[in-house]
Amino acid sequence: MAAITNLNVFLGKQNIGTITLLPHDKSIFSFTDKYVADVNRPALSLSYKDIYGELITDRDVVQTRLESFFSNLLPEGHLREYLATRAGVKDVREFYLMWILGQDLPGNVTVLPADGEDWPPDANKNLTREEIEARHRQTMRFSLAGVQLKFSALMGLSGGLTIPAHGTGGSWIVKLPSAKWNGVPENEYSMMEFARRMGMDVPEVKLISMDDIGGMPQEIGDMSGDALAVKRFDRTDDGERIHIEDFAQVFNLSPERKYERGNYRNIAEVIWNEIGEDAIIEYVKRLVFNALIGNGDMHMKNWSLIYPDGRNAALAPAYDFLSTIPYMNGTDMALNLYRGGPRRFDELTLAGFISFAAKAKLPETIVINTVKETISQFYDLWPEVQKDLPIENRVAVSIEKHLKTIPMAQ
Image: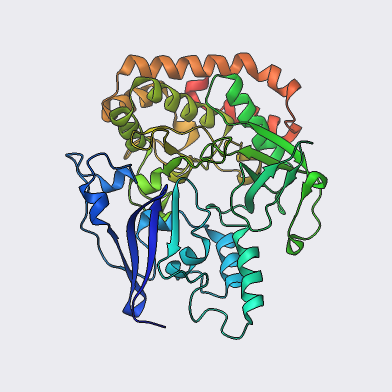
């Protein structure tokens, strides 16, 4: 293998930079001169913007991993291990994972090998060319970021879903049933629809029978029940890409630190400063809603920004709303409300949100009114959604018990 290998980074159709593999498994990202000189450049990430709004061009060399923005575009956990095994590369060697998966990343970023090679050198040395190409096609079917087994799909005229043969494109995300817990798709579908009825910005979601999903990879095995289909908000109906970034990318955090660094106040400060009042109301509403349903997994990667015009940030639609308490039996939120502040659900009070507003320099009236209105609306709709949505009894019972432990919900 050559001592130096390059991956070209595209934002839309524009080549904005290069990831260069250096000796000893190190890499560095650099912007192109054209992108740096463009005063009307599209935004890649707030993490590349300094306090004066200027582009940060000095980048550090990183070992084995890619720098955080790109690392967060890759799958995590068991899905990463599965893909790396299929690709014949080590799961920690992110340059090679990006080489393989860079054609179908979240948002408007595409990463392609600069020399036109479609498979990393030294990977799968003992396979024939045909076998390598077959593995590439199969690997691409699972290229989306996250830890759950999910992939991009095309919605057919009949309402069924088809998994693209080569994994690229698709306007829906299919999230398969959990092998460990029954009813997870129904739980998430119900919580997302509940949030929609409360006026939150939620993408279209559907429960789809596994029998109505075509093109399922054979290695998945037999699965029954329903999967959750979520319409992608980073794609238009015409298949055009829309740029997004999650808050692990905003704060330059590696994926495994999504629970460890930062807090909900930090997210609020960015939303208030970059977007404004309507977005902060939506954010507080989502934060309170997830506390009420007992979602202990709203970490940094489960909040995102979207760039509809390519340059200016907006709060991305909601995703990954589900009640985790029936499965995790946890009492903690994914993050503290603010540094040193409450993390346990049973510590959430109106006084805590007053402190949250003060520390984030938000108007107290807006925050507290939103908290109160969200709680009131939640209780008004709770009986209705239990009748109309496929909320399992154990989920409903868990939420009922949980609500009694939250001081601000009394």
